Amino acid sequence: MTFVSITRLRIRSLRFMPQFLVHTIWTGRQTKRADGFIDGSLLADRKRVFWTATLWRDQAAMRGYMTSGAHLKAMPKLLDWCDEASVVHWTQDSAVTPDWLEADRRMRMEGRPSKVLNPSPNHRDLLYDAPRTTGAVPIKPTEQA
Image (cartoon, rainbow, N blue to C red):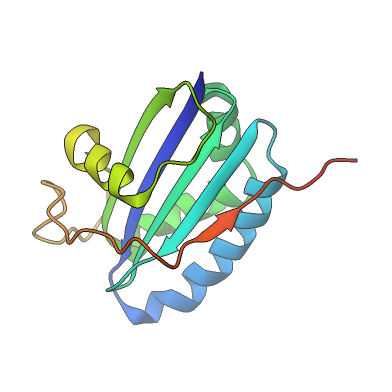
């Protein structure tokens, strides 16, 4: 079974974007090298919203990534940078990254809001516009020597 992780973050102000983008580059590099990472995609949506879809060998591999390195350093900053943040996980038989319509459907039905310090009125109930379905950037594992 493949473990799927979908995240949605909305950066609450343009002033946080430069720092967010730097941390996105660092965590992207970490993701590509992470043990158990299979495939993924990053979608820069409208209104400072960013979606990630990542596939992992199992939940333990995803947690190992999440609780180490650049990702661990970025997570506390998101509390202040974001006014909306949510996550959903599931397992599936295939190692195919879900499309953004499926990611959105799962987020609305099974997802949960993440803690943010300055939540928007829509944060708690996951009330947001549907994501665009084009323009995503693939995230591929780095070949290990």
